[in-house]
Length: 227
Image 1 (cartoon, rainbow, N blue to C red):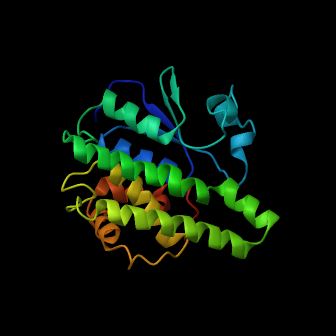
Image 2: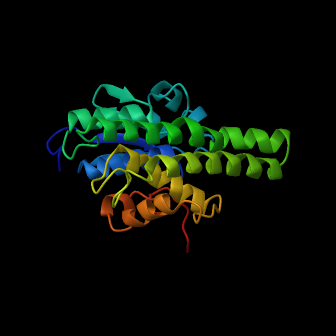
Image 3: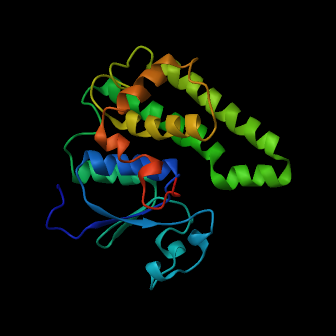
């Protein structure tokens, strides 16, 4: 393990969070051991002091009350992109960005579409608000529109750059953002991937990679039991 002998990293996570999901992939790719600390967003753990956060409640760790948050000794980082970049700079192998500047820019663009163009619109707080203020049908329409718009843009962006994965045959930053977003779109929101063959091909490629498969929501310690 890359961090053997050092104090173990702590990851505050929620099993179904796509933001936490992408960080779990990064940690796995880097071969980093970490302590998984669940934050149940549905039960409101993020707003209440609980024993495992003693002597601080979660809002002290992350004032936004969102996941993930990474603790590395005295360093606390509470944004998935910032966490991934921190890990990539501290543990540079394998690199999460290509040397080629054009491919690097494509990775940043794909990351940004997911990070700002899709995920915030399906955030738990947002869809709860829409459901409460309007109705569940409007919530579904809202989420489907955001995902469809984002996936259409991603399909056009990656069609000419994809290889086995999003920007070639190596795993890079874009893949870390694509995998959780597509997983959630299919399994939570029943999005049909047929209009997005490039994205579907990338997603299928992740099935052969343990770092991706071990990070899926259903395999996390706080995931509901299927038995």
